[in-house]
Image (cartoon, rainbow, N blue to C red):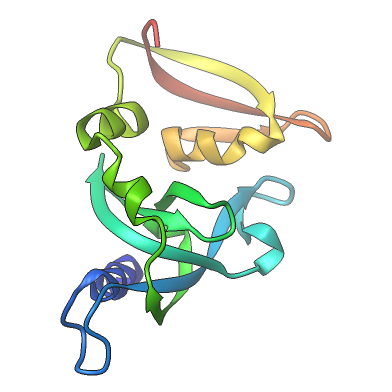
Length: 167
């Protein structure tokens, strides 16, 4: 339910007819979370709880997950955000930034590069990785079909099934 409410707010921000006061797409702000492994797999706020100010351009679904493609005001570039990691969304008005950057994207190539999944023989694997990659692993393998554990202060281990391919 929470994801659908967030999607609704993002759609409203991208709409040209949200209300009589503001007749153009507008910026949003939100808190963005990541996973932390000490004391169990938990979500914590990124950027130390700082607000993300984003000009939203596109919502899409990939493998059952909603993503927002938008221009991040702080990073000054187009980024992808997992909608289930967004919280406390607010529409803040203001003209969107990053229009030229978004229009320059070849959407077919972009989606293929950023959201494609690869196929291959399924195998059970154990992977050791640096803690900074934990979000990417949770994004790819989820929380239900993978077991995460702390290896040491700098690394974690994940045990899961993967489709092994050249990619």
